[in-house]
Amino acid sequence: MVRERQRNGKLVNKIFPYCMTAPAIILFVLFVIAPFIYGLYTSFFQWDGLSEMKYIGTQNYSFVFQDKNYWSALGNTFKYALVVTVLKNGLGLALALLIVKQVRGKGLFRTSLYMPVTFSYVVIGVLWTWIYNPTFGILNSFLTKVGLGSLIQGWLSDPNVALYSVAWVDIWKWIGFHMVLYLAGLQGVPNELYEAAEIDGAGKFQKFWSITLPQINGILVVNVLLAITGAFVNNYNLINVMTDGGPFGSTEVALTYIVRTAFDYRNVGKANAMSMILFAIVLVIGFLQFRVMTKEDNYE
Image 1 (tube, one colour):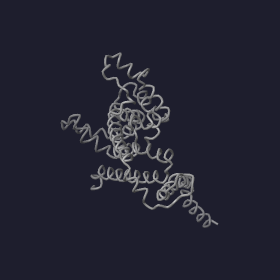
Image 2: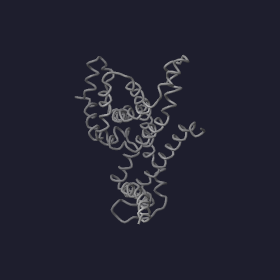
Image 3: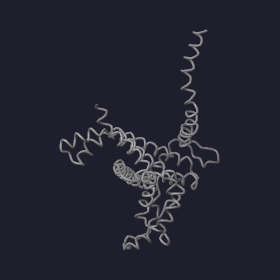
């Protein structure tokens, strides 16, 4: 009886982890893996989403490579991703460095910065559309009252600034999230390292460059990777709400053009081919970024 109970106990211990992870794995397969495989499959067909599919091989991919509008939208995506990634991490790290110090009201400050993360893209988009409004928006009103009327412009109607105006909203929404991650990393840096550096006569910049950055390199890699992937695959809702591809296509990014191709132009096969190309680009960029930023750790 004792041996049998021990065997049953060992069997339960082996099965228990799989039982606990099974629901998450099933959901991941159903809502991520299966749609991806189906999207890859339909990218080889001519299909409007309703009628019978017609196999055309790699013609959809040929059409995509000849589509100037897609590559223009992809160029906007790269601009958007560059601005968003740099500012999310730069401002997030700067705010974390400020909050990690013993300052009054830092709990309230941290909460207020993180609060936009909890809002949906639709709410954020509508809110900032009002703020940017050229007639009654508070941004232009504020610039007028402080004597900076020369800076007033159509934030969402000017092709030169519309994309960056939307990018700022994305930054504003997620900056608190990146700040919290950096804050967690900074709190784990031993004070002894800074004390030793002060004894050696190191300045603030030297301590930041030689101690802080190497110590939070893992957090930095995660933050940059999240910012890059988010800028490529999570920009549809915000742009769709605020500009819908915006003046003269200046805010048309890859995702908005893919959705437009699938639902407006009724070409699901080509839209899925675009999605596969975008996925490959994001995968390569993420891999290269991860390899470059962890190069020193790999040598260790």
